[in-house]
Amino acid sequence: MRRLDVELGERSYPIFIGEGALRESAERIAELCGGGRAAVVTDTNVRAAHGDALSDVLRSRGVEAETVAVEPGEGGKSIANLERLYHAFAGFGLRRSDAVIAFGGGVVGDLAGFAAATYMRGVALVQIPTTLLAQVDSSVGGKVAVNIDEGKNLVGSFYQPRLVISDVSLLGTLPERELYSGMAEVVKYAAIGESGLAGLLASRGAPSGRLGDIVYMCCRCKAGYVRRDERDTGERMTLNFGHTFGHAIEKYYGYGTYLHGEAVAMGMALAARAGEALGVTSPEASRELLGLMDTCGLRYDFDGDPGCLIPLMAGDKKNTDGDITLILLENFGAPTSRRISGGALGRALTADAAQTG
Ligand code: GLY
Image (tube, rainbow, N blue to C red):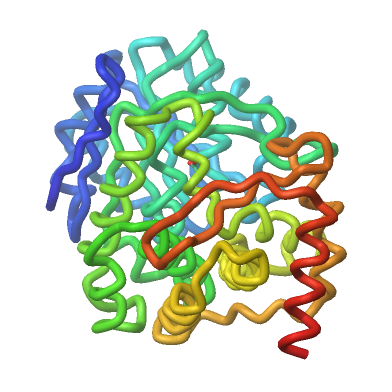
């Protein structure tokens, strides 16, 4: 088990990564449940696959646990489920000295995290991510939220966990599609500059090898961005490489058609194409990015009209005045942030389509 620290002054916290990290972290979890109780938030798939493992760990340290399982999928991040959690916490008698344990993927982490941030004005949060995507991204950095009809993540907060446990053995039951979705985020970290990661991926290819090392390197990269820009007002936005296009692709096809990482893979390919057409991205950088996605077995072709994505991107809550803030690569490993008008981006994508079509 390896340790990384997210350095945020008095809100710093450790991430433990490796095979068996859950069992090895039992004492640390118990320390955060000062009142002797933990509310475990999970989904029904994770409960069936790994619920007993967590229960055994908690029981071994005398922590009394109550589990609430939501339905798997993005629909779980609803106000209705949030309210359900508050009632369950109150019914269980959860106190401020107890802890909420988010045991699942990004949906569970965001939902449980926002419930922990707001219940009794904040109780300790432990993130135990069970998907690759959550281990390399969403469990670290404190973004927690639920969705409302008007948009994803519109109600949320920054609320840092007290402890993150990324036990890569939990990924053994993950459907292959979910694993590849997580790999798209992994490639993102290589593209934005986590040195050594591209080499590791290129030598390994498929996600099965060296998962502990991969998760460690991604978390190291993310922890740096979070330390330098916790509130996502500047440098942390670099983590959005591929995401502005990706979020628009998710909307374009309807949420749930593509997994988040699948849309991000397409988004990174589109960002590379647009960046080249705008004269920002070197052709070598695009080649390296697409080559790495090929090596990792990722699919990244967007078969729609890229022009249709622009209004969806301009409506993104991070963009104003029809300008779109995009993270582009200058070179592989060297990202840059550019504000581009919707019109200029549309022309770049059309020019690019004319060249490649
Ligand atoms: N998922 C991107 C971030 O945490 O900023």
